[in-house]
Every structure is written in C-alpha cells, then in structure tokens.
Length: 86
Image (cartoon, rainbow, N blue to C red):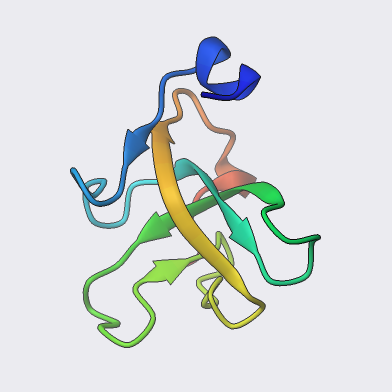
C-alpha cells in the first residue's frame, strides 16, 4: 500500500472498471519512468475502442505512450476543460 492509497482509496481495474466515458483519476505504471514507477493521470474507459479502451481527456489512447492503468478513483466536480473531448 502506498501513501497515495491512504489519501484516496483506489479501485483495481481487475476488480471493476469505471463507467464508460466517465473521467476518473488513473494510477498505473509508465514505460517512461523508472522500473516500478507509478504515474497518475486523468482519463476514462471507452469500450468502443477495444484495442485501446483507456483514453485521456483529449480522447487519445493513453496506452500508446507506455502508461498501463492499474487502479482508478472517481473524480467529482471536474471543470469543463478536464472532461473528455467528444
């Protein structure tokens, strides 16, 4: 368990996926950070893109740059500029 888990409980993507299209806080591993490095991003899950369902708020695949989501948490009251582009 990390200090981040103590501040905000996160849901394992293996246990449950967020509702489609809902912006969430994502935690995962990054291919561009040191081995085992954690990264935190805003994004959403979109099953309409089965090859790359994890998207950033610009609707680009977040997995293309080496990020692999492992956990997520809901985010309340997001400003409009941080909601997914559609």
